[in-house]
Image (cartoon, rainbow, N blue to C red; front, top):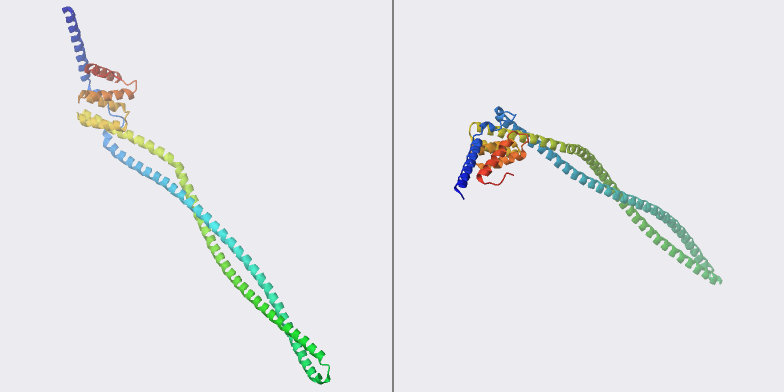
Length: 358
């Protein structure tokens, strides 16, 4: 390479270096007025805002807890209603079962009473038959006695055979009458036993019927009590359902208030950052601006101020470029500082051999 070309190249490099230094000095010497000023909430009310924010957050927590409690009450009440409904069904089924058992017992009682009446009529007929047979037996005994007397008088007269035959006939009739009386007495005993058994069954049926009526009364009272509880639960559930309908609105209002509180808290940290920057407490200013971007990650002003502090006061170029890039992504296109930020990033990338700006 010729001396002339070398000299030209050296002059070009010297000029380029000089321009770069001028650009760096220009950006390093940017006025502190570049810091975005305090937001409209006012820096003189920072402590008051902090207290108000705490109170509002406490109120939001209380409202949220109340909404959650209403929701849990609705779930509990729904489970209670289902259990009460099942209990009512069980009580009604038990009542119907006892009602049918009572009707069956009443029917058995009536049948037993009808059968007892029939047996009593039969017993009365048997008693009349026995009385009749006893009368016939008495007449037969009298006739036998008369025949024996007649036989005794006519024994010596000759024709006794006919009377003996009559005596045998009467004895047979008497034996038959005795057998009939015994059978009638046996039938009478059996009928009385059946009557006693039926009377016992009637008594048992009366006791069971009385027990069924008592149980039915208790079941009816239980059903009435359950229906009353169920009606109260339905009314309570209706009130809770109305609260549940309002729950989304409450959540929306809580979300809106929470968003407003986050904005206020972010503004408070932002204003503190501005305050510390003006007092040249840059580390504390950075901490406040960092808190602001934690609450509102897309707050362009906070990112700009962080970038500016890192660039001009803390001399941390990577951090400055990081926040300036975030600022460019979220800031409005008409923001007057966008061109300055772009030039800063391009300059330091060219000077430091970094990647091109995104």
